[in-house]
Length: 482
Image 1 (cartoon, rainbow, N blue to C red):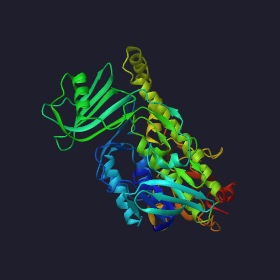
Image 2 (spheres, helix red, strand yellow):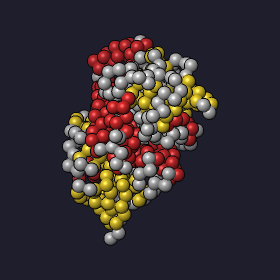
Image 3 (cartoon, rainbow, N blue to C red):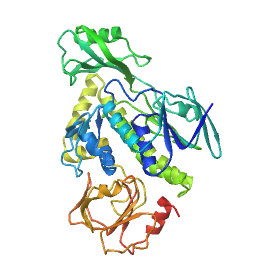
C-alpha cells in the first residue's frame, strides 16, 4: 500500500474542486485532487451558465477569455422573470451560457497547466484525523496523507458524512426528470405548463439531440430515471412520447434544500455542493461553488504556509455560509412562485410587476449574478467588504486594469494617492497608479474613490483609506499575517 503526501487533498474534480486546486497551486501549495470518475468527461449539459461574479473571478486570474470563446452571452438573468443586467457596472454584465462539461474541461486544463495532480478513478472511503493532518484511504489507491482535506464531492458528499457534519434543511417536495434524447416526431421547443408544473424542451446544437425537462415528478424517486418513465411523462404532459429513443443522458433533480451546519471540522473543510444543495433555479449552484473555492483558496494557502493562524479559516465560514444561505432562500422562493396553482399565479403577477421596476430589477439581478455580496468587515467606506470594481488605471508601466493586478492571486495595495506613500508596507504587492474615472458599484451607484485600497486575492476590499488613515496595519495583520 503506497502513501502519497500532499499539503491539501481535495475530494472531487468538479468545478469547485478544480478551481480550489488551481487557487492553491497559484499560491505555491502542494494540492492534489482525488476523483471517483476515471475521465474528466461529463455527459449531459447540467449547469448551463456562468454568472457575472464568477466571470469576474476568472478575469481576476487572467483566464476568462477561454470561457468567453466557448460560450454565448445573454444580457438577462432569471428570478421568476428575466432581469436585464446589461446596464450593470461590470465588464461582464451578462450570463455566459456554457455547458458544465466545457467549464470543467477548461478548468481542468488550467489546473493541468499549474501541475495539479489528479488521481482519477479513486473514491474516498475513510478518513482519520490527528493534530497534524488527515489520513485518507481510497477504494482504489491505498492510503494518502494531507495536512488538510477539502470535500468538494457533491451533494451526497462522502467527506461530509465521514466528518460527521450535519446537513439540515428541507426535504424534497417535488422533482424533475432531465434528459438528452432523440425523437422520431418533431419536438415542441419552449415551455409548457400544466397541473404538474412547467415542462421544457429544446433542440441542442447538433440539431438532432433534444433536451427535455419534465416537472412534477415523485419527490421520493431515487436512482436514474428510465426511458419508459420519460416516455410516460412526455405522454402525460404533451399527449405523445414523440417516439423518444437513444438517450445520451437521463437524470433527476429535486427541490431538496440543505446546508452544512459547519463548513469546517478540524482539518476537514467543505465547499460547493458538499456544503449546500438547492434547486437549480437561477443557475446559481456551480457559481456558488466556484466562489466558495476562491474565498477559501488563499486563506487555506496562508494557513498551510504558516503565514496566518488557522483561525483565518473561520472567516471562510462567516463569509460563505450567509452567501449560500441567501441562494438557498432565493431558490426556495422561486420554487414557490412556480407552483402550478391559480393563486400562486396571481402572486407571480405581482412579483413580475415589482421586478419590472428599476430598483428591484437591479437588486435581484445583482443577487442572482453574485455582484451584491458584501462581507461584514465593519463600517467604513462603501467599498469595504465588497468586490473591487475592475477599474481602468494607469501605472508607471502604462494603462492596465485592476483585475490584471490579481492574476497571481496575491493581495494588492493599490495606491491612487501620493506615489510612494506606502513604501514601508510589506507582505502585499504595492501598486502606485492614477484613476480618472468614476467608481461605480452595482445597485449602489457611484461611490467616492479612496486614496488607497487593500484588495484581497479574491478581489474583495479589506481596507480603504489614505496614507494617514487608521486600520491599515490591523487589516494587514488580520488578513495577511503578522
